[in-house]
Image (tube, rainbow, N blue to C red; front, side, top):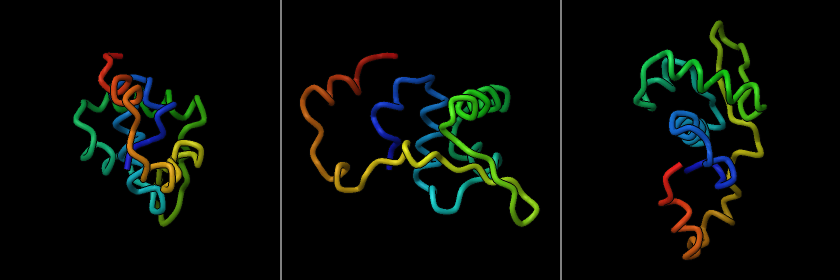
Length: 98
């Protein structure tokens, strides 16, 4: 599953992080798990996580002696909306470079 469309107009690494977190929104992910899903170096990943946290799109929670990162609820698409076919305009917007 991908993050909602309104959160996809961000840096490529930030969108990849959001997508990875939305896929595992119930469990959360450690930084190492995110890094295994997002192909970038650790500095870019750190910057992306900092930007997303600053904008309130992710949260970091400590539990079981590790830090889990989860997406904010507003980033997670509604499954009913996701089932709809994207409109022609939506398809064009997805293909536009950032």
